[in-house]
Image (cartoon, rainbow, N blue to C red; front, side):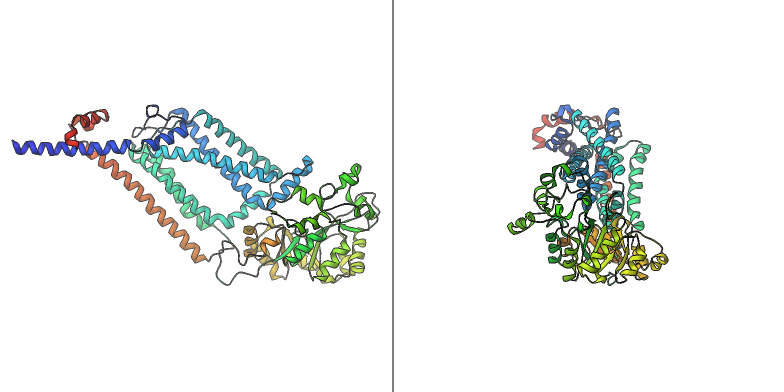
Length: 580
């Protein structure tokens, strides 16, 4: 009798240890769960929350309907943030467009980036809280204030994507190009997210009491995971290449000089470009009313001069309708210090500020003399004067006079871009390097003696660049400011790029993200293998935990089969000696 009594006590003590372990597992993370539910649902107290029973839905019907909206808001905000982040190369164009419509200068691009980042972080936090609550087996209930916030994020992201797609559709080409650089790293990020999601996924799948429910939970997850495992097979990047196959670094051509360091199209701007070792200078040429070619990008003078102060009644007049004597009176540098056209300009020295304050409109002849003295290539857009202008029909002849007779620049330094009267230009200036601004069949280009293509970077194609290079036709891409985009142009074989950031790109000694196919394959395979191992361990851990719990519930033992923990707590409180 004594032996059987001792044996009974041991069995009871063993069961109570199991009960104690299960109680601790259920309640030891209460502060953590309280924080999760508090931030997500504003339910800080335990009695306000409910657990998800095994095999049951994670939330009520209304919450089930809203949860996809939360996921959708996350996806759209991520797409917009990525799109706008990759658009940084063209922020100045975006701000210039807004300036033309609003009439005042402001860095709207930077504001939009900050707003997009804040909204994305907010919606990501909500989604992380939801995943953590699911991992803890808690029912989801999103507070009404967060639901309003989710609708705001979703509406803002969709509206912004739509407007930018309509007004600036070429930006999607930039996004497509960016994938050639970021795809391998986005792949790693997506796999990491799937590993993190495997914890709540495994928990609810293994607890499900029906096979159909398990298939519904696990099936889509495994399908997405398999797709991510195989997607590298379709990836392409010119920066994944064998050692020794990379071409020379593209030459740098200053876009309107160095507009991040000095007022654009001024003498100071081109001097800064030369100081930073650029290989060429790019500008825009307009002809004054009395026939003096000068440098100006805009059709009016309001953005880059103080015309509002000197000629307040002529701010909207075309720049070509002013005489050179009138243009000489304008200051072309004060606006640069006041408006700060680039967000990444940095601070200028006192000497640079003083020099910028005293810049004037720059003559083409002076620009060409400067380029010739420094042995720099020049390329320019030549704008035809408006109607009723004296040089409306002789603009090319007048420009040629300045280039050939007044400036003294050596002809081989001139990249002639203008298409009109190309045959005539070739006859009077055979030394010019004939350049065209669009793709065409190689045969047609050779027939016109074209030696260089000047293309927007969105038309970048390593295959086309290689095809033209085989015919001794080099490619220049514009306007490239960001290091990742310059790296892509370098890997694609571009001969030169036009840039606002000569001072930054000159420091790149090799392309970013450059790797060999072997290195990429190792990275890809190790990522997939590590994720398979971690996901398998997570599913095995949940299966083991649930199996160990179910094995403890013996038939005929009401204490362990009841499914409630109140009885467990009562038993424990009544037997303090045994627990001790």
